[in-house]
Length: 297
Ligand SMILES: [Zn+2]
Image (cartoon, rainbow, N blue to C red):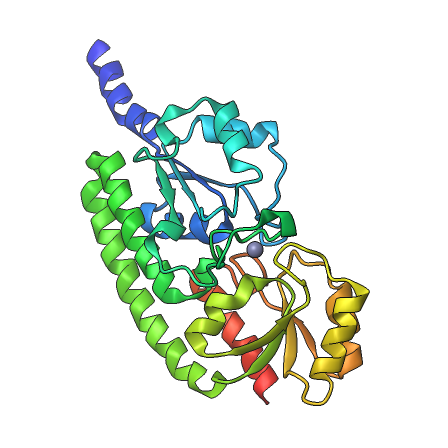
């Protein structure tokens, strides 16, 4: 009888005790963690596509998720500066504090663009470390995937061979998909857009899109009537193909400008969960390209 109980405990306990707990700040990293860690990991994602990742309330449920996390994956580059330090402090979880193996910041592994000449928070710019919205270039996702896979093996050596197999399989599918997207996107080069926030700069950099202006006068600063009037004057003679925004952006300013310039305003998925088709990272890029192609016609 005792042997039977012992056997049952051996069979059950690893499942319950060893499920790796991952805390992801944004949906793109939660989705990437799912690809690389598989169903065995428990993943909590702090924000959805409909929430501004710059701003989040440190709710008790999030503090609890940070407290039990073995690994945290966030963007970094100050994207979460307004809420993550507070969550980490309140959680008291030293395994995922900055600088420890359990703390992975995606922006550390890519080349950041739009680095300011000087940091001046007084002007309200919320991108003082360069543009933190790095995930809309699939080459960046690939770099972060490799870093995340390394970190999973470091934190959970027992699962190492599984992580290795998943990484290999994911990267093969991802590189193939990236090549397909790049073929499709040749028709998009030079597409002229206005964006609301600088959430699409890496997409533009990758696909050679031409973002002419932003509705926000500076990242994080709401549009003013004066700035919008300047945009109408500047863009009126040669309007862009469209105006793009994220699902978490208020549509009012985009729709106003769209009407003034006579061009479509479009909500791109921006991240996983941002549209019906963006159910994972592959769907995110597929849908983004499909929507941009509609502007090209
Ligand atoms: Zn931003």
